[in-house]
Amino acid sequence: MLLHQQLPESELSWVVNDNFADVLRPLPFLKRLILFPRRAFASLETSKIRAFWQELRQEKYDYCLDYQGLFRSGLIAWLSGAGQRYGFAQAREMAPLFYTARIACPDDCRHAVAKNLHLTREFIRRLTGQALPPQPIAVEMVFPTDIRDNARRLLPPGDGPLLGIAFSSSWPAKNWPLEFFRDTVAELQKELPSLRCWLLGSPAEHEVGEQLLAKLDFLPAVNLAGKTDLQTLGCLLQQSQALLTNDSGPMHLAAALSVPCTALFGATDPALTGPFAADGTKHTVLRSLCPQSPCFQRQCPRQGVSCSAGISPHAAAAALLAQMT
Image (cartoon, rainbow, N blue to C red):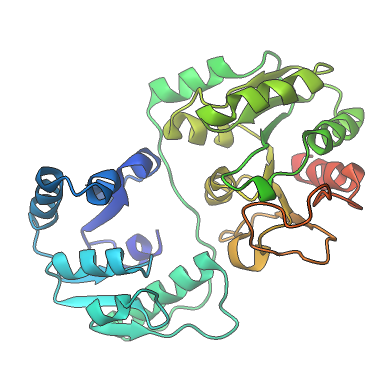
């Protein structure tokens, strides 16, 4: 978005993992989406790898920015044929070997989004000679009408305030107990009697969503885990007043769409991957009191001890109430 705002005449292409492409399709300023067949590369399917390379080289690129900073993304930057390739000086897996310009981030620039913005601003400064001051960045996503209409039909009936709940994540250690979500919603409903909820997650998380749904039988709620594609998920988030969430991918999508998040962190560090308020949206992070937090472990190293221990659902409800009213 920052590149488009500052260089509106530029033609932008984006290389994205094929399973995440849908989340980028609503960005109206992208000229091309180039789908990276990750599974094909892992299994060395030469025909799909060759097709990807051919698509990548269909355009002549002047510049390439590598925001991922891994060997694979650095190699893709080099294969793009771009004469100037920008990336992080601290990138991993020898990725800087593929760059013509290596950008160092300040020590206090730790969050992944902040690093990407720094790389973008430094690229623009070198290209135009003008330094950009920090400024809000609003993400514009335009979803098709049929997808928006379908999203509305999936929601629980009523016209009360709408809360999304991302109750799960890819790491078991990042998942706070279902009882914490239930108790938070119960506290919130005391102040918002017409509250409605919807649950989001992957197909593998649908069964756990059913368990949480059973605990939320005191208000209108639906379990949509595994029932939405990425564009429908974006539409549902846009229609929500807030998101109660573990550290997860949907949290970052909500933050990009300016949906206020109340985020629960234990195994990971919100300074690195918390909800990023690029446009001034007010997010709240509740951090675990566990002395080993953040442990960065997929499985909790202290079995039987919850990340939520000592954190009151009332505090989460109060944060959500402030965001939703």
